[in-house]
Length: 229
Image 1 (cartoon, rainbow, N blue to C red):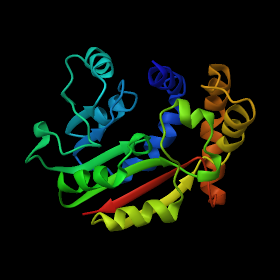
Image 2 (tube, rainbow, N blue to C red):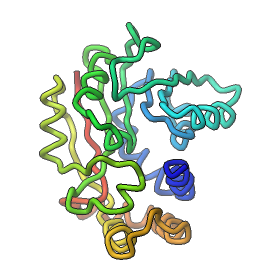
Image 3 (cartoon, rainbow, N blue to C red):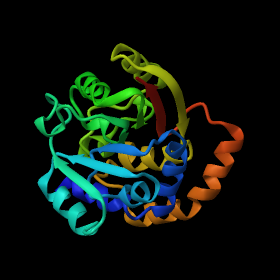
Image 4 (tube, one colour):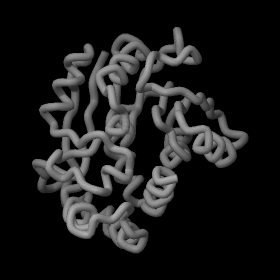
């Protein structure tokens, strides 16, 4: 399965995972719904940080992997499609945080998905998104990764406001990753980034992130977006 290969490749970059988590952690509450939990790449970090974690995933195989990986932990797993009507398993539920890490771009009707997220939040709760930046960078890696789009900050901010959120934070990061994505996906037209490249980038990720924190890049590979209900 193509998406599983992508997830396994991402799992080869734990340092970069830490970079992403540091950027979203200040916005997390205690009762979190992680949409598109996948195989649980960020789940261990969430379980260490939050009192309650529920994960939604459409793909049964991914649910099984996450269940085995976190057996015995206080993790609720729900198989459902958040890009369609609100799943019955979540009807009437409320969370203080709804989290989408590199998932919204996989949803055809992202407006419906954002409205579903709004319905699941307590008043004052936060929607926390990590989405791909730079629409001009869309290439074969996006296509084979199951992406419908890449966003710019104006588009994603507008979509949050259209679905009832007050925009609290919208910031790009990982500018240095653009070159590798462009070369592998636009020039070499690869389906997946080579694992050797991913491991090399991961070794540099903490240093590159510290540099970006200093210079404040105007664009990057990804955007962290936070909206309040």
